[in-house]
Structures are given as structure tokens and as C-alpha cells.
Length: 332
Image 1 (cartoon, one colour):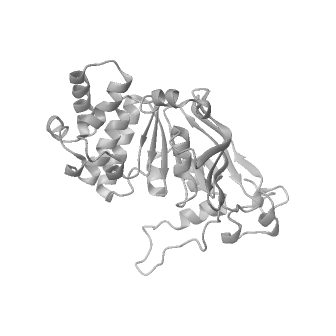
Image 2 (cartoon, rainbow, N blue to C red):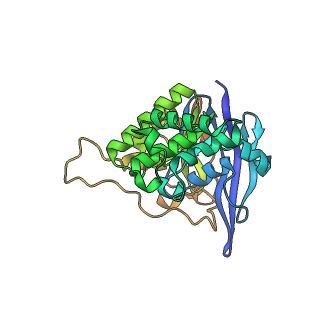
Image 3 (cartoon, helix red, strand yellow):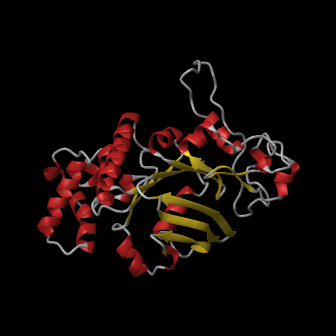
């Protein structure tokens, strides 16, 4: 299976008054064609920075690439000029942002915002662009699309604004869609509709999706592969089934344990992960999860954990599975 995107040892930092914040610290992952890769983790772990790095949307300064490559169809995005990136954004790679109310321009009608990408990337008339904008709104199930195309974002509900955002992202039929927390502000019913819509559009256009989320229920429903991030690093990666049913890293186990379960009694308490993520002004020398891990060992504090492959494509960054570790001699 070919990969449409390959991220290799990506390192992204921010220069601040207090010093350098190492937001993304050497992550590597691939996005296969026509598949969905989910990036999960707590707030502040580097998910959105990774997404914006792929689009080259981080302001420079304060952000800068410390190292690594982002290969889209074999070409390194990091080396692209602003002009070259403008030809890629919205055309080959599109993004659905977390909050549609702040992402949409409140002073522009939604039709004009949808048509903007078409008029920039294709040599077509305004009438043809409007016709295609109405078609894409109908495709994302916005009722009375020919009328609502002339309305402003504040005249739409939260779910409908998110549909407009998806329409903007899909109008050019991109090869890669990055969805950054696309259902966070929506109620459960609308959330299910948006996810179903994304799957429908993926099947229709054959595009790949990077899904940024902290909602593991969404991950189980949408993704083929999962990247579990913590403190700017990928702690575990594998197929969705491997991450949910053959979990290896203590952090992933704690994330899954925090999910509510159907068999829980009303008096049962949800599990929580004690402590807070490390300060990335001064990143930890060893495992970033050391302070919060129930299985931590002395070696974890000052030594970078090795990456162990348990099955083809199922990787875990943890000392437990070193050949001399507690789990190293067991069948992975």
C-alpha cells in the first residue's frame, strides 16, 4: 500500500520570552492512501502543532522546524515556498479546523468562502463556481443550499457551520484531509452525523484523512491506524484493533481505562490519570510519562525509551519491553 504522506523525525519548536518550547520532538508516521490515521492524546501533547506543521500554517517566528521531513507524494513540504504552499493548501491538502465559528469569516457569506478555493485554483467563471458551491453544500446535507449560500456564518447552527467547513475543505476534492477535533463542540447526535458524512466523502473521493482528536470513541469508529502522542512524542502506534485490544504502552492503557463503560454502575467513578504532562520548556531526559506511570523504573527517568515492534507496524516506546525489562521475555 502506497503512502500519500510520510512524516520523518519531525521536530517543531517555538521561541518564547522564557526560552524554547519543544512542542514536537522527533515524530515519524505514515498516512496510507485512502485510509484514516488518528492522532490521539491529551490537550497540549502536540497534535494540533503536528497538523498545522503539515499545512505550514504555524507563524514563523515564533515557530520553526528544528529537523525532519514531511513528504507529501514524495516532496518535502518543509522546503516549499509560500507560493508553492498556496497552490497545495485547499487543493491537494485541506483542513477542517476545530472551531468553525472562529475559522469562518463572520463578515463574508458562506458561499463566497466556499467559492474562494475554486476561483483561486481553477480557471472557471463565478457562475460555475457558485453552482459547484451549491452542489457541495447539498452533498454535506445543508438544506436549501441555493438559499443558504447567501447567508452569513452566524445564521447557521454549530453543526451546520461544521458542515460548511467540510464543504470548504472538500470543494477541490483533496488527496489529504486533516480534521482537527472536527466534532468537539457538537452534541452527540450531530457528532455522529458529521463522522458519517466524513466517511461517505472519503469513500466517494478516495482521499486520506488525518483525524486529530482526544475522543477514543471517534477513533474506534473512524480510523484504520492510531498514533498515540504524549509530550510531543509518539508513545505507541498501530492498527486500531491493536491499540484497543493489544494495548502495550502504560499511557495508552490509562487513556483507554478513562473511557466510560456500559457495564459501569452509577456509583462507579471514572478512572483519571494522576499528575500533569511535563513542561516542554525543559523536556524530560528519559520517558516523558515517568512521573505519572505506575510501572515506572529507575531506568525510565534519565534514559530515552527504546522503540519495540510487537507486530508488523505495532510500535511502542517503553522500557518495559526491552529485552531485559519486565515484559521483554514475554510473548508480545
